Structure formats: structure tokens, C-alpha cells
Image (cartoon, rainbow, N blue to C red; front, side, top):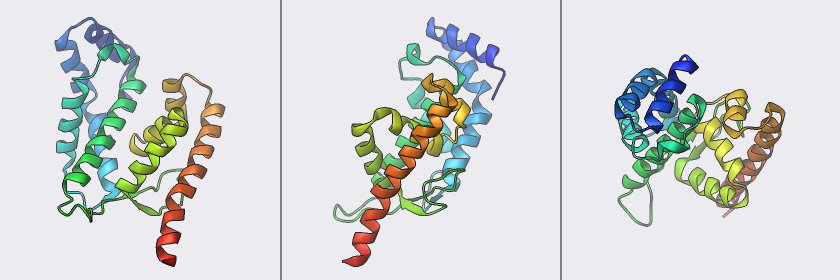
Length: 193
């Protein structure tokens, strides 16, 4: 991550209404946002977005949010990962030309401690599962977004969620187990049908 004091200063100035600080913040984090976008796109198969397009769309959405909610660099990156997830899902849905059939965009979930050891899932199915998980436990959904879509470490997630790393590890284990069941069961049922 970029030098935290400089980022925190820029965040504070942005919260005070300084749009130049906002622009400087985005410029300072551009490489990190590009790496995040590149990692998200590498995990997809069939996506037509380029890294720069994903970063630009995410930045456009980030500048519209209530900057008062952003408390630090890790939180900003977590929000960026959530926005990128939404952009990718919206993009996948827009590619659907037939209402009965959607274009399958898959997410390769090979991340340290992934739910499945590298199984590819339909991005829209994953989004649906995350929405269901969010209805049960919003913090678990947020953790999955940060880990899968944000590529954030356990430590970064703990900082954003303001809990211990041990708590994040326990929640991560719970979220992985829940998602495995939610995503694998429909595949098994589909194959048996």
C-alpha cells in the first residue's frame, strides 16, 4: 500500500470538500487500483473489459460516494473492490441478450484459502449467493467482497472491519463454507437433472 500518512491526509482533505485532494488520492492509488482491476479480470473468463476501463468506471463511481464514510486507505481499497465487483456484474448482465439465458462470465476463485481450490463459478451465480449471504450476515458478505474481489489480506480486512485477525479468520472460514454449499449444490442438482 501507499504511504498511509499521505493517504490519510488526502482523505481528510477530501472529506473536508477538497476535490483536488480527491484527485490526488486517486492518482496516488492508481497503481494499486490497476493491480486490483487486473487481478479481478484475470480471474474472469469471457470478460471484454480492459483493466483501464474497469479502473475508470470504478473511479467514476467512487467519486460519487459519500466520502465521509471512508476512514482510511484499506477502507478505500475495500470500497474500490466492491465497486469493481458491481461493475463486473453489471457488465456480465448487460452482455446477456436473451432474457432466458445469460452470458456466462466465470470467476476463478484461486485465492489463498479459496472456497474450492480453483473452481470456476458463474459471476452472476456468485453475486446471487453473495446477496443471500448478505441477507444472513452482511459482515460475511463484506469479507468475501474484500477477499475475492479486493484481494485484501486478513490483516487489511481486520483493519477495515475493526476486528482482530483471529475474528476475520473465523468469519472467513464460515463464509467459505457457506459459499461452497451455496455454489456447489446447484451445480450438483443441475448435473443430476
